[in-house]
Picture 1 (spheres, one colour):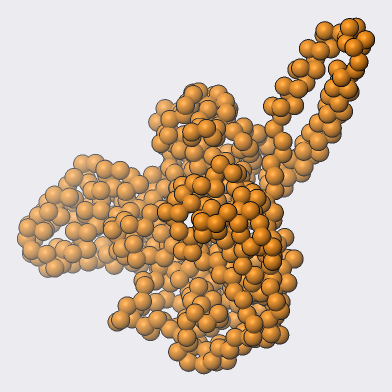
Picture 2 (tube, rainbow, N blue to C red):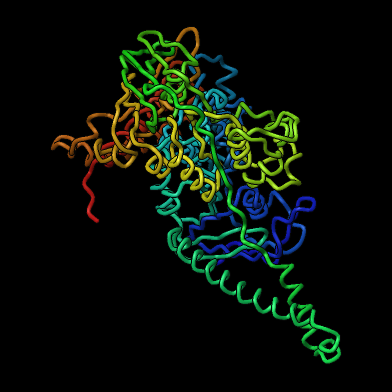
Length: 638
């Protein structure tokens, strides 16, 4: 059954048409992946479906009472609310009421009588709105995504902020979920959890992603947006690629046949005066029609031509790390870590968000000194550093000025190139090179940063999350570049396929400052370790302060590498009953807290009730986490 229908929808920004009379239907339970080049209009199509943008022409029909949740590509940073408040905001006005109650109940044991009366009033309003079931959905979302409810959103890492916005999208229990690059800034454990969750999701799903592993597992239909037109391909991503290649080959043959026929007509029309006297007017009209068809033909889009100058050879030893330790406050990033990176090595770095991957990169290239130990850099090193925040781009300047500093020429691989021709290799048309960088999509900014970096020779490439926002085709071309690159590569990425295709060894954050070294890529490490890193609140660690900060272990629990013991099996069987009992007690206390009689009792009794509610919430979080931990180790039958 269709829940959303687009009919002859058109939309343009200035002279650039993004959608040209497109048609699309979304049915209940579908998992549709929207693919297309960066800047093609995928996010605009999402906003049209969501109602945030009105198309220039055409009709958008949505089923009555349809609930749509939209996770946007860019995660906001300036929100000053707590994580709980941001998640509850996904419910609307009731969410604001629950946020007030959450804050009031948290501080009730330190409040005066006026604050307790305010708590009583909030309880009553939630009762009237029948909001306690909704509050339970918020608590469950926080627990399942391992989110710190009382931490300020602005203090969270990029991956945690991403999970918070995902929880906000999920808490309203939508009929249609729109996810725009949901895996950006998520660590591998969170991405794996998201895959499993979305496979079991009962609503319709429309998503944009560059993560080919996620795409292969989830998609039941592929919709391609190419220069304003939509094409639909049933089946998964691999089937889409096969059919797409066959269509391009058939189109190429048909165009070659058309061009041959057009050339014959052109030769005929240019014959001498005698032939012109006898020419067939119908054939002349056919020729004019063929000329118009040729001019209107949409040629296949060009491919980005990315290349990098590996510069002169560095010394054979690129980086020598001996017993290095580094920490923020009392949280160890690395401890007693030693390794050697030789010229030509391709090293991937894997770990949960907040574990210190970017810090390790900065240590390895000499941008930060270690607290203990020694790091020696090789001779003749020429670095190209791709930072995940794209801080090397000047947003107020144009595309041209970012690459050439105002000049019309850049020097690439030892020779001068016109900046327009150079940027065309990175798929920037001439009319876009004078646009300000802040008007570019995330993927276009990534391509621009690559173009800027590759104007300089580099025998060591340091790439910190280079795959975020890139379309799949450009991502595969970047892989090809790295395979041909003769220098040394240091790579941080959460893209499992990208890691497997580009590196020859991985450094893995295993918790408490331990960094393991393994030959091969992500899949090779998984085969050796036997488990995926769990989603943990270590990824939500606050920025370091003078007083230091608490932390949780960021690596995999060694106990998760073995099978369940008899005791653990019994524990797993008992956990659902324990969770149910806790939830029943929580419901009873919540109902009691909503009654006015409670607030006629003494202050200690009120504080005890509120305190027990908070304890139950924490116990439920631990029980859910333990259940997921043990359940993940249960043998599966397929």
